[in-house]
Image (cartoon, rainbow, N blue to C red; front, side):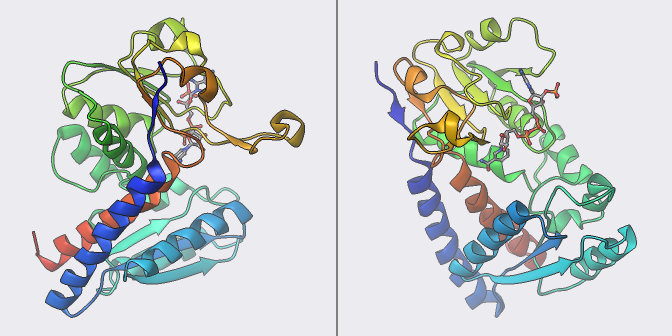
Length: 292
Ligand code: NAP
């Protein structure tokens, strides 16, 4: 068997196009386009690249980007003041604090200060709680994007065995909740899981978000499973040989021979994260404007 390759780039482009046309409708109705504020503390190059990508994507769909930057030695109170000011700014529909923060700034405490109605990363305790309770709220972007990728290949989730490797607040936990809400039987694995390969081999849907290159080998995968690779791992030039230096958590070449469908890295899950940031910003803007 040779797996269907799930084209996250194309699906994300479609989602962004849908957001762009909805932004026009929203702006015509309210007289203002949704605004997305990113807050970057310090000058970590990777974080600056991520923030730049989010700003560009936001402008491309007709939203208004607000680019707030603070120095690496900013105090907790200075970052908190910036977040309070954005919470109170009616032109800003969504607020995103780029993590990780430098030094000993407490990212979780600062994230919790974002107005839950503007929490477009879905990471505040309020939105995490709403998800756990099955109530409407803003959901974390990457797991929401994965749900769209699963739907794109008509994955049957009801009653399916779904295994998520990774239990981070950013991805693994909300991913498990979203799958549970669709009536999958969900197992969450982590670094203390015993017989990881055997647990994974039960999965109809296997989702890896670990950060270990090619941890998921062919032996981990049940033939016919849908495999989603969230991991992003940079190989050294020696490890990469003549191939791209970015690989996922799944041994793509071997697993794609037996899976029913699989996401590549790059071009799978990654593009969906920004697409869903835009979806969430539109959702937040509508809710703030009282539009269904
Ligand atoms: P994280 O917070 O570091 O969590 C990693 C998880 O993997 C933890 O739950 C950890 O278990 C588990 N783990 C580590 N080693 C393991 C092993 N040998 N066997 C089983 N589980 C193991 O990472 P994250 O933020 O969730 O991200 C995970 C990966 O996804 C990273 O590569 C990241 O770059 C990528 N990612 C990509 C996107 C995207 O947009 N494409 C978005 C988010 C994340 P413990 O809890 O026991 O430590």
